[in-house]
Length: 278
Image (cartoon, rainbow, N blue to C red; front, side, top):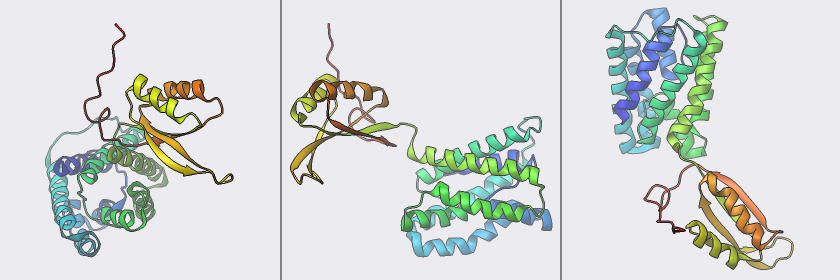
């Protein structure tokens, strides 16, 4: 998967960014600057730039991550070298808006797959992963900031018009990469505060085949102990949950929030058999 992800990223980099004279963020963006001013193949310059960053990554990421990083860095350079020598093009009629969207989409999916399987391509990826582990900052956000700095330096060889389309690609990239890493399936977490917990929990389990968990709570104002209900459902089931709750307690308090990924029966495993009416 790291190989496939790096291949997708390199495809967008060579056949979209380079083909339409768009800039790029991160180390590959620096490689484009070097290519313009010193005529060095990005496949080689990106590899050279990554060496000191990989050494920094060893201190913070450990040996296992270092192996994946070395592999990702190397295979990315190989893919960049390969795509430059394959004589085909992605015909978008030089529409820079489409180029920006497509570049961000392909790169985001490619690197999202790489990150999801614990790989990196070196460079800004190492910096972003360190911030994620040490500070809890989403990788997409760190990469967007890093890209902005590199893109500012790229104004030395691209005009402002192409720079704006490159920023569009960077934004799409940061959104898609988080989406790819977190997973396409979303669910809803629900916490229910009510005096009719037993009846509500029974109906959720019997009517919807969803599990519930009781949480011990204490009222902040009243200081009285109590219990809340926690459950996770699909987005389409939220209305049914609300209906069950209001049937038993019109004055209940319901908190609903997004859950980016769920593992367990009914979500990633086979759903429980629902009771048939006939």
